[in-house]
Structures are given as C-alpha cells and as structure tokens.
Image (cartoon, rainbow, N blue to C red; front, side, top):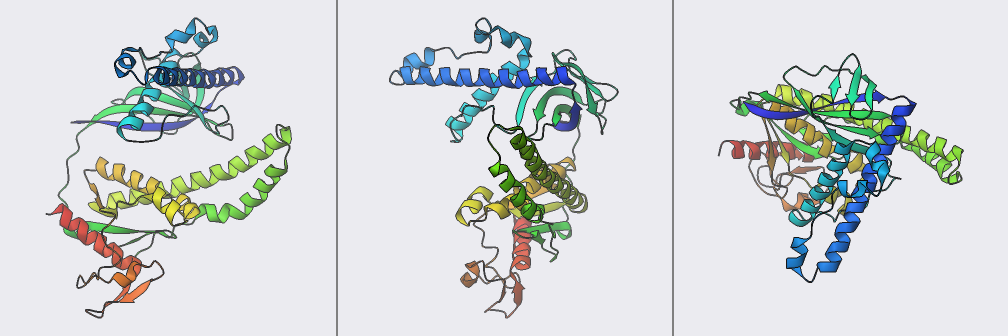
Length: 375
C-alpha cells in the first residue's frame, strides 16, 4: 500500500460577513509573513559577521505578534502558523535549491490565499457546505464526493482576480499501485510543438486550439480601455474585472483541454516518453514567451505524470540535449544541418529517407525511451 495525496477544488459562495473575515485572514497572513521576513532580514544583517551568534538567534513566530497586534486573534491561528512554514520553505529553497530570495507579499497581488489544517474535524463537508475554522459553514459547489477512505489534511482558500472564492482540499489515502508490465508496442513518444502542443510518434498532432491567441484581439481592446481609466476609480475596477474574466476564461479553457488530453493518453498507453525541456529558458532565449505560456506544455506534462502514476504507468523523460531532431529514425545518421528550427523537412544523406522534423523527432524520443526502460 502507498500513501497518496489528492486535491479537490470547489467553488465557494461566502456571505458578506464570511467574505469580510476571509479578507481579514488574507491580510493577517500577509502581515505576519512580511513581519517575520523583515525581522529575519534584520537579524541576518546584524549578525552576518558572527555566524555563531547568528545561529543562536530564535526565529520569530506568529504568537510573538498577537499581544501587540490584538486583531491577529480574530483570524484562524493555523493560517498564521502556515505562513511561518511557508516562509521557512521559501528560505530552504533559496539556500538548498538556489531559488530566488523570499520576497514580501503584496496586497495588490491578483490572487490572495491562505492555508489551514484539519484538526479534530474542524474541516468537513456536508450537503454542499464546507465547515472552515473561524468562518463556519460556507456554501460550496461540491461537484465530486470525497471518498470515505480519504482523510482531509488541509485546505487552501483563495480569491481570484475576478472576486471568485475557491477552496482546494488536500486529502490523504492509501492505494495499492501495481506497476504494469510495459509493452514495447504500447509506448508513445511526444515531441513538443509550439503551435500544436505536440506531435506524437504515430505522426498525430494534438491540434491545440491556442486559446490565448484567439482571445488576443479582444484582450488588446479591453486592456487599452483599462489603461485609459483613472487610477482608483470605480470604472477602472469594473474594467479590471472585465479583463481578468477574459484571462480566466482562457486559463479554464486551457486546463479543460489539457486535462482531457492527458487523461486520454494515460488510459491508452503503458508509457509516454518526452524531452526534459526548460520551458522558462526557451521562452526567454528564443523570444517565445507568449507561445510557451499559451500551449501550457509544463502543465500538460505535470498532469500526464500523475495520471500515469495513478495507473502504475510511467512518464519517461529523455535528456534535453538528446539530438532528437538531428537523428534519422531509420538509419540513425546524425545530420547537424537540421539544428535550425526553420528546417521542417529533410532527406537523410545516408539512406535517402524523407523526414518530417516533428514526426521524426517523436520517433527518436520514443526509441530513446524504450532504450532507457529496457536497458
């Protein structure tokens, strides 16, 4: 048996009083996070030349501020405790994984959220309502039932730029996953295609609808209107929500398409092979920012990975430096002339076989994945 985690995301419909308390919690969590971050930075600057003394300093906790700022007692204490854990996690990523240094949180950020934990059943669902600590029973659109063997561990309450509230519930459950015996004839290779999302080793393209590009003209018009609105005015706020709704629609369309596509591949194949690409690097170095953000390749591979693992299947990643586009999938000859992205078709100088760049690359990726699986 293996312990797994899964999340359920439901739409919340809080009343006015509940909305106010949720907004207060957002603010208190942000305040505590920024206070602790500022104090840790001051401590570091004070003792940075004395490492021994620096290690003796006690880290700040949310409880430290409650006597001075009494309004912190009005909100969920577990939400404040999670702010401390999030800050520590950010520091760990900075020191161990060389990620960016923790930044102060802004109340102007379009998405506000906080996380709280389930203790003694203080988070539970009943009849399209969810009970949240300090807030009570909130109306909720429960479109999927949580199974009896799934234990609620925590939940994250968030507010989108359009003013909608959501709750993401993290559950833990036991499941026996038997790794399946991979059939070489039931493996699929995918070559990332900026326009169509991917071309597979059977020559089939995903035909991604490019939702952002389709919405671009309408977004340009509405964002120009927003730029002409006076800062702080009601008209600007109305226009901001209108623009946010367009972006939200694009994001929902993208997620829906990628969820269905990844589910289809996970159900039909024993293993899927892809390249381990750095999408952020590609967007910056190749000036493909909008295209990279539009096709959602990173989101797609994440969905595909966990959906395959749930069924005991595998997502195999080949090295990003593997010359998939340069190799002839028939004879293995490497043609360096195909490095240029403008070369969409080429004829192998060794065997004379004609190749479509993307289809040929997908076949090579599949073959490399088979080699890795059965080495």
